[in-house]
Length: 147
Image (cartoon, rainbow, N blue to C red; front, side, top):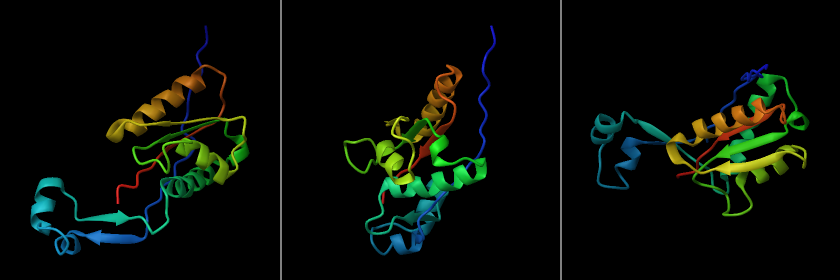
């Protein structure tokens, strides 16, 4: 019995332009750069632009990953988005990404809602589904808009 191998062909990332430093945050709430950094290691975070949705950020990262892999949206037959901050409760953010990217309507698309481990669960799920032989190219996205 032969088993199919799963390879990561490309990666991509995206972060919003606006940076919120700990110093700026300390003017909004009772905290300090030292307090935040000593407990979390965080010095700054990115803030989504007004009107920028989780799916928009996922699409930006997906385009870069597809370019890196040498694939087109039409090549994708499985799309999984790991997020706890979906654009809407329904439809799934993966379906919104599918539409925005131009992934075929025949592709399987769904969200995984598992917070910090969501991307790992989505990646493992994609690997299992690809290993079945039913799917050939998966796009796995981890995207959050907690700002």
